Length: 373
Image 1 (cartoon, rainbow, N blue to C red):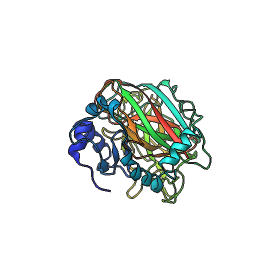
Image 2 (cartoon, one colour):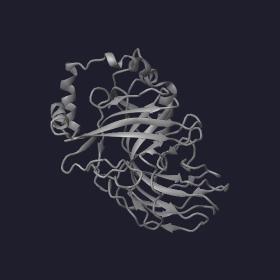
Image 3 (tube, rainbow, N blue to C red):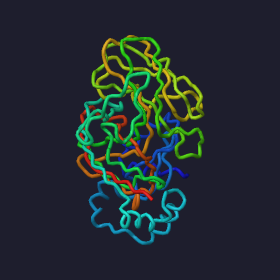
Image 4 (spheres, helix red, strand yellow):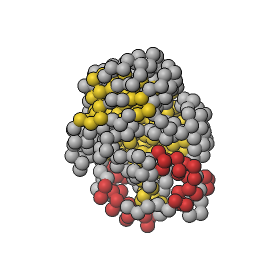
């Protein structure tokens, strides 16, 4: 897949947004992540490279295009290429088949969200899991050793997600609006979370496992590769104690046991942030590993007297840049960004604010749509 011209992306999304997302992927170990909202077919690869095809940015920015969106008419000349893309990589025989499934058979679901984000830290990722209003704030995880395998019925998930049996479901569009410019939402499937006991330096076993993305076969859509782990501050800030997350254990994409490289925590970390260093939204893995199947052990280097910590496993769905404040940033997987990412039955969909550009609390509203066939 060819690289995308940097100048075009910067003109469309803005230089800061492009650089911030690229930096966030510098040490990524999993498969490429779709970049929503960029007409063409653009993906962020490990190392921070943008690859694919961009159909915008030569002369106009996202704002320019948004202002003219009501005047745009889909051109029939694009149809042939898109039908081929459907045949190659999607769960539909053709674009016509998808239209038929949606219009004639009603195989589509609309999701509405409204999330009042937390005050953040510059270049640090925040979680929107606990926060409302739509969906409501997420449930606290179970304590170790069992934890909680998250599903669409978990409090805080989009409960209207349909189970589609032998069909496959895909993200086809999204229209996020952010109250602060320059933020990037990551839509992800929250697979598993477990509550860590604080005020302890002892090892803590984890026995619970996710129910999705558990295959050790790389060609299987359910492959572990791409699952990422993160350490999340819950509803109580951490005490002012320097600490690292070590020695923490997990199973990798081959089902083998592995040790997480030491992850530096933050003294006095505030609620709803990731207890990671700056520019880090996923925990690093052992050399050669590309995904976490399950957590098996948690440990902190110091006894942090107070605070709530959750160990989480997620799987990325799509990056959604919100480059202009209070403006709909449209992602249309049919007529613009052609990268329809699969969403599994019972997925627990949620959001991360990736590497915030400022500390300002940001409210997100919008919709996204899935279709299946």
